[in-house]
Image 1 (cartoon, rainbow, N blue to C red):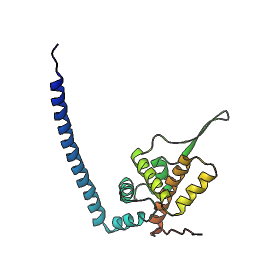
Image 2: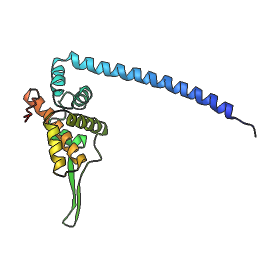
Image 3: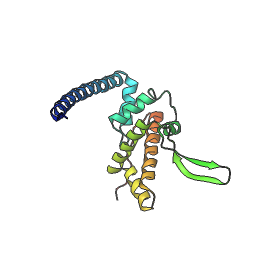
Image 4: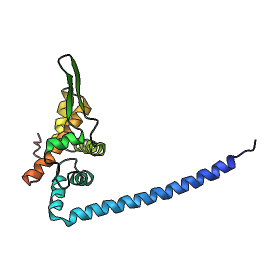
Length: 179
């Protein structure tokens, strides 16, 4: 049997080169799309105002603010924080069947996983900053709560705070009392 290892090395290098070119093209297209999304938000006074106010919540950055505006169509489709929390999969639901079968509450698997992932990163970011969410996290962990369930509660709090800012047309104020 003939040794074909020289062919394998040549083919692998060619495939890797093509993949790198494709990755560069995709990165360029992603940047163009992101730039266009920001331009659309910046061109509408109301969206620009909401975009800026949302980012005053600890942990909420450009990515989450943009995603919330897109997913809610400028906060005109999903009108309540509770519905958004359910949509994003941060609300635990009881699982019961009559009086005999009871499972511990779990979050829905039908959630928008991309939004949930970005909310998780926002929650992680918020507990690293000096704010009331970080204090809440520390307090609950010291009480013996599971860290992931506390992070899930923080995700829920972030959504509720964003919707409160939109509803009240205000900005987030960190009322952290330093002792």
